[in-house]
Amino acid sequence: MEAKIEDLPTELLLSILELALSRESPPELFCIVSRRWYRSVVTCATFWRSIDITFDRYRRMDRATGLVPSIRRHMIRSHTCGLDVTIDYGSRWPWESQFCDAVLECAGLDGGGIRRWNTLKLMYTNNVPLKTFEKIRHIFQYPTPHLRELSISVSRELDMTHLFPHAPLLRVLRVLSATGTITLPHTFRLVSTLYLNNTYIFGIADLLRNVPSIRSLHLGSGVFSRRADQGETIELLQLRELHASVPYYPGVLPSLYLPCLTHLTLTCRPRRCPKPFVVADTCKSYGPILAKIENLTILRMGCSTADDLIQLLAHSPRVQTLEMQACGRWVGEDDLGQWLEEPVLVEEFYSVLEMKELCPLLSYCRLNGVDRSDLVELRRRPTS
Image (cartoon, rainbow, N blue to C red; front, side, top):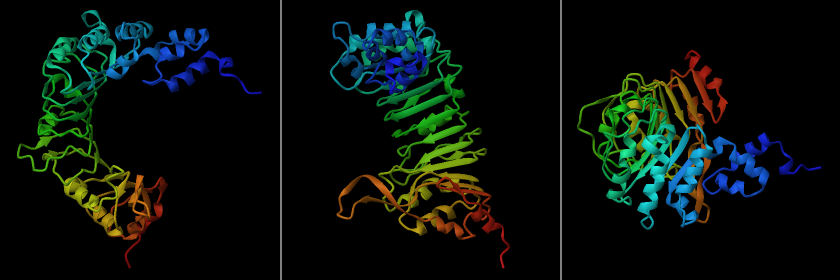
């Protein structure tokens, strides 16, 4: 006999509902199903920790009341839980009054609410009127003692020098996209993980200099300049891991001094994989780092032929630990020349690793999730 969902224990019911939580299925939606669901969801503080101040959220609300009552419910019902906040004015018609009121409600009186923020996603684009941002700018001058992760997206110059004056726990900074210069506050110098994704700015060098303590750097495919940065070398003395996407075009990073770098992870966007110059672009952009790295992970790479993979590995003579997955020939069209929804991997070239002169120092190898100790042993055999 099949059990009905109403017969499930409350803890299991809440666990299932938590998996279904999303912007399209907020906790308020579950509250109207039944009295039991209402009682269960209202008293579960973690269900109310996410607060979206976005145009999409606003247009789903009763226009007579707007977002403020909803945010107030979330603030009360989440009790003392840390809050995950998204602030995005959007690109539709103006709604300055409701937007500002909603942000101020979430910040709380004298910054009482902002002290509970754990994560913040701040979208600051050309669509936000300057006067609107100035009305809420002061809230970011309150202490954020529990803020651990900040994501920002900007399409204009953003000076954050006097914002977030007290953020002792902030360790993750995500620059989702930027087409203007971002000036970071001094408090961000303790950030340990930095994501730069599609950041078309000339100030990438200054951005890196403002976070000298990062240990993990994630670079998207649009962070490169078409010309070399002529400034001073940037020293990232604590950087251990570099996670990089293959660039859209061959470019150059600012001159980097990475004395403690131990791990490099390379990946390629699926749509980029079928392009014939992926490996060449990768070697041009990351050649100096490939030449020194000892631990290399390649999660996806488009190689038109086996020679492409040979070329990539030949740039990495000091590699000792090698992991690869989905590296080979990708196709973006079917036999009739029609574009596929997603490119397909049709051939892999891992057999090139049987060439002992490639990665001669190899001590660990894992291909598509399978340990290949045979390739390691091959390099240990004496040459006859």
